Length: 262
Image (cartoon, rainbow, N blue to C red; front, side, top):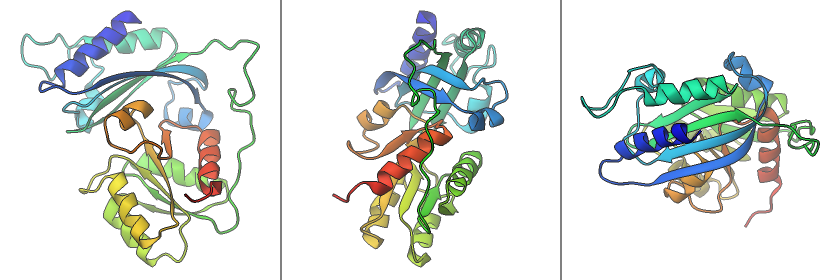
């Protein structure tokens, strides 16, 4: 564990040559069958999550796909062996866990380690994911704004299964156009980091000028505290961190929709 965190911290330092912020965060997490369906090597259940986040140069999708390969490195000759992340991957897999990278070029990176959680007698129904999922009221409409096709499809399917009416967009301008022409939108469910020049926060701000009563729920693959501490979102906003379970998403959306307006 110590070696894994040191490796991730060293990578984070190297990704921030001009300085930045490193955040290490721990939490309990539940991985459900829906997430496992898209990640066959993962076992559903309760996990302890450890997230290491930096505000560095970030990685593109091709680099992320190769990041865990032995001897793969983007560092200059003599600056890295290319074994750090492969060792982290090996440690997590040998422990029966799961590891996931979220990264955006120019924004930073979060590496999340999920290690199996020992279930004691005190495990509650909420922790075990057995609570019933609150459903949508008639005609409640959610606009899903997400650039990752797989994540967007999962969110849309979840909301529709819960009884919500759903419309979807892959970037900020498309979402704003939908808001202008749709007769009813109750909630904007948006990723924090988006392509096309507009962030999720900027889309939400513009959306509020069109629909002042619109509720907003942000989502991100970055660690919860890191996304706030790094200034990408204001404190107090509603946020759910990927990967989220069916039950977690259902409960969070219902809480946001039922909350009284400020």
